[in-house]
Length: 254
Ligand code: PGA
Image: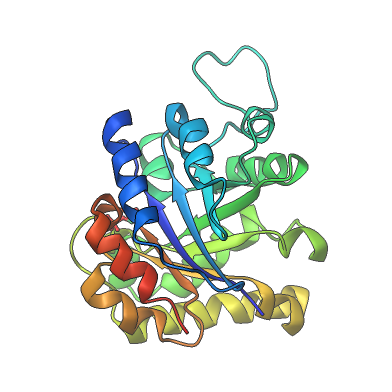
């Protein structure tokens, strides 16, 4: 049975102290997760060790990096490798967030290298895909996202692809307050799952968690997560409030 996931993406927000307080508030609410549920906090690099230690005793609570470099090591000042993340005990990493594609010009090809490095280092990549508004307006979102999958992901074999998670994040819904409708989210998630099924078989496709991201909040999470192919969310803004994020965790499919 595939996992239902509430993932927080803090982006470049919160001081160390604020981050620690937020984690503690969420953990103190004592939500017990079922074996098929995970809560993942994608925190800034300097907070990874603190966050990993905060969740160490909590069943189903995990920590993720927000990015890694596409090279394994070397003269890349200021960069962080997948191996470094692995050697501090972190098991997840967001790859290909649209903000990195836009501000750091990360191409599908570079993201393929990042996925490989994550997998080589026992890290589950949370691979983000999704179209900008101009693409949606031309109704070309399905082909666009298909190309992102083909160029970054489809070189993986069955065993490797089973180890990844996908987050569908329409760029026009990120941080804008505009959420994809439940029907739009379900339609794209089902499209993604059918692409995976065509390439890797239905059994593999059924095992891969596909999260929705883009203005998920306490007030819309339950409806979005109720869709059969939406396996939880990757949450930016609303994950910075303990009360909001607690409600989002509680909205995971039962
Ligand atoms: P948002 O961000 O929830 O603030 O729209 C989601 C994301 O970028 O992962």
